[in-house]
Length: 423
Ligand code: EPU
Image (cartoon, rainbow, N blue to C red; front, top):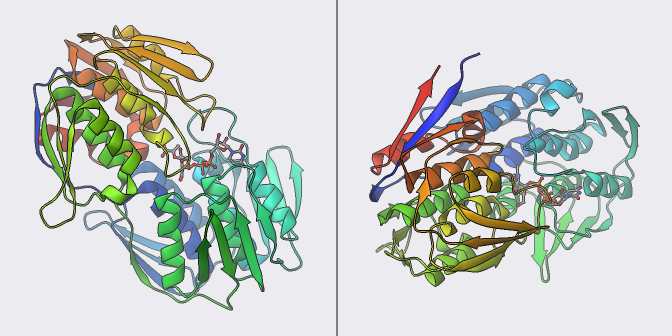
C-alpha cells in the first residue's frame, strides 16, 4: 500500500483568496435524504471527499443511480427505483454518517437492516439517541451482533425529547418523520448550520418543518417530496481551518463564500486573540487579518451556536504559540484530544486533566514526525507545522482527505510551504 506523508515547513505569511467548497456535514445528510425523494435531484457544490464517495457507494447499494461530476462538483441522484434497505457492515464501518440512512430508509421502506457505524475515533460515539427516537416512532429494533434489524408497521409521529442536541439524531428523526402522518416534535434539537441546510433542502422539496424557540423542531408529515436542485452551504470548518492556518503564520486571507453568521463564537474568539475579522465589501465573505502577537483565550466546545468541537484541535494548535495560558474544555467528545500528544512532541506546553486542557504559549514549536488520527487532528498538525522550526512530517494523511478537499493545494496557493510525498 502506498504511504502518503505530508511535509510542512515553517511559513512566513499566508496571503490571498481561497474558495471554499460545500460542507461535508451538510452534503452527507442531504445525500441520505435523497432516499425520501422519488425522481432525480441535483446537488451543487458537493465536495470531493472520501466520505462523500463512501455515501455515494452506500446509496448505490440501495439501487440509487448517481453521477458525480467532480470538476463541477455537481451530483445527480435518481432514487426512482430503490430496491434494497440493507447495508453491509463493511461500508457502514467506513464512516459515522452512514447511520443517517436509517431514518430515510424507515420512512421509505418501513424497514432498515444496517450495522453499527464506524468513523473517526473520538470516543465511544453511541447511537442510542437515534434508536430511542425510532422506538418512540413505533419502530421495532433487534440487534444481532453488530447488525440492527429495524421495522415498523407504520411510523407514527411522536414528541421526542433529546437529552443532548445530537446533530445526527436530529437529522435522522427529521428524515424519518417527513413522510409520517401527524406532527413530530423534537425538543432540544441540534440547530447546527448543517442541520438547517438539511431542513432548507427538505422544505424546498415540499416538507413542512417549523423551528421554534428554544431548539424545537416540528415536522408535519407530507404525502411525498418532489425532485429539486439544491446548492450545499459553504464549509464553515474549512473556513475556520484556513483562518487558523493564517493566524499562526501571519498574513491576510479572503474567504468569499464564508458567512459570519454561521461562525460567530469562533470568530469572536479570534478577535479576542487580537486578530482582525472583517466582512467583505459586498457584505459577504470574510477577510481575516492576523495580528503579530496573538493572546491566549479560554473556550469550551459546545453544540451550536457555541464553539465547534470540529475546530478545537486547530484552535489548540494556534494557542500553542499565543502569549499566555489558554484553557480549553472539550465537552462534546470524550476522546477528541489525541492531537495533544503530537503537539507536545513538537514542543507545545500542554497539560490535560480529564477533558480540561491548559496550553501555555511558547515562542516556537519544533518540527517532528507526527501522526494524525482524525480529520481535524490532521489539520491541526498541519497548522502546527506551518509555524514550527524545521520540516514537520505528518503520517495518516488519509484522515485529511475525508474532510478537506484540496486543502494542501489551497494552502500552497496562499504561500504555504507544504507538499505530499507518496512512498
Ligand atoms: N451521542 C450519544 N448518543 C447518540 C448520538 C450522539 O451519546 O445517539 C453523543 C456522541 O457520542 C458525542 C455527542 O453526542 O459525544 C455529539 O454527537 P452528535 O450526534 O452531535 O454528532 P454526529 O452527528 O455523530 C456530527 C458531525 C461531526 C461533529 C458533530 C458535532 C457529521 C457527519 N458529523 O456528528 O463532525 O463533530 O456532529 O458537531 O455531521 C467532523 O466533521 O470532523 C465531525 C466529527
